[in-house]
Image 1: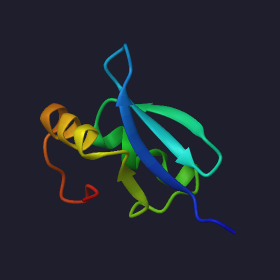
Image 2: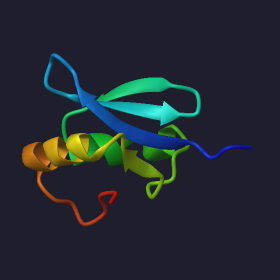
Image 3: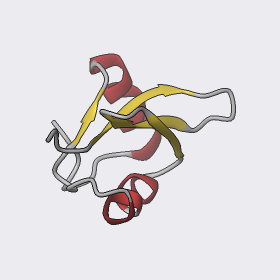
Length: 73
């Protein structure tokens, strides 16, 4: 069985970033680091199983939300 994970993806038109649970593709929206970490237990995603879709998205998130000690690399 594949472990669930979240991938932080492109910004939506409302300013939030897409939070996609893999492998099933459930899409949520995140406006802060809290919006990334809070749903992890509810959606069975280990908090260390979060990544960015690419380096550009990573930089956009950092510009918008700042660093977080538990953020993915």
